[in-house]
Amino acid sequence: EAAEKGGYPHFMLKEINEQPAAITATVSPRVENGLPDLRIPELSDEVLRGIGTIHLVACGTAMHAGMVGKAAIEALARVPAEVDIASEFRYRNPILRPNDLVIIISQSGETSDTLAALKLAKSRGVPVLAIVNVVGSSIARAADHVLYTYAGPEIAVASTKAYTVQMCVLYLFAFRLALARGEQTEAEIRRLTAELLRASEVIKPRLADCEQIKYLASRFVNTQSCFFIGRGFDYSLSLEGSLKLKEISYVHSDAYAAGELKHGTISLITEGVPVIALATQKQVYEKTISNAKETKSRGAKVLLFTTKDAVVPEGVADYVVRLDDYDDLLMPLQLIVPLQLFAYYMAVLRGCDVDKPRNLAKSVTVE
Ligand code: G6P
Image (tube, rainbow, N blue to C red; front, side, top):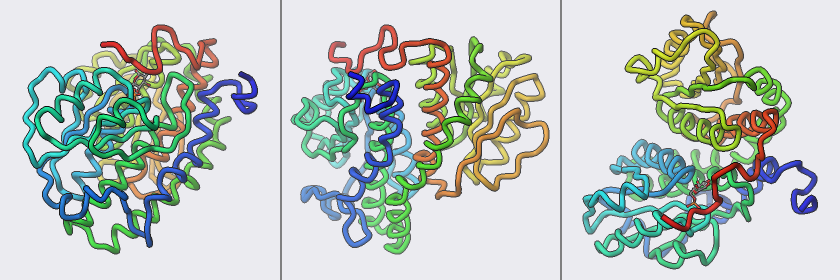
């Protein structure tokens, strides 16, 4: 097993560090002359133009990738997109129309609720596109079309590299959809595709920052409970960062859309409560900063993740982690790395079984 870990103490850390290679393997084969090419003849531009609503359905971390996909699809292609938890979708009699598209997202391709959601969509005559990591898995076989992620085998129960490449495939899909529907210029899609191709380079310095993140984890290691806040993409990343932390370090954590704080959670913010504030999106930067400040003024210990040049006013954060400049739309690919590392080091410092957290399975094949 030590050999399989390639010198890393845990599979999770190895897999976090495999993300640049996984991104390149997943994105480059789908770029042709600088533009995204899904390489699925049945999903021609003409077919993409006819899509009504897109339903993204998955469980756990894959569902969080779906949230990023929904935001990218709606922002770029202006096609309505919904995200569903598979176990909810399958029992809520969802409204599905013949020109809709269901996108099923799964690392293993074997999750029972996700497979059931796929079968429901097919029984209603709606085409299903699956984004799957495991070749030949049940979901890959049952779907009408498959876009494989090329993360390679993921052993750690907590998903890291699979999530990142799920987002990459969803970005490529959103780019192609926007191009096919004339919602973005070809020049803009070329620019975004080039930025996406650059993601593997963009995240390398974040991997190299691991000592800084380990230090920060040591400042929060004795916490009982913490909160993640953010808006837009930063909210989706709050959910994923919070889930990672809960799964492997057993610290209770809640993720909140920053604007919702005052509708409940702020009553729990007292002296020393950790708040991890994500503020990478220019459009809502001031709003999130003001929310972070509200928690700080109530005694919260604030760890802020923001961009290189963002101006952080006095009295907002105890610790600041800076990311490099990158397109706001693609920022989740960079932001997820320190969040994964934070969860990882919290778990290590708390003496948890990082790769095999209690009660969790890598793939949930029973309901
Ligand atoms: C389990 C795993 C999670 C994963 C979820 C969905 O709960 O522990 O890491 O996100 O299943 O798995 P899938 O293989 O469908 O992506």
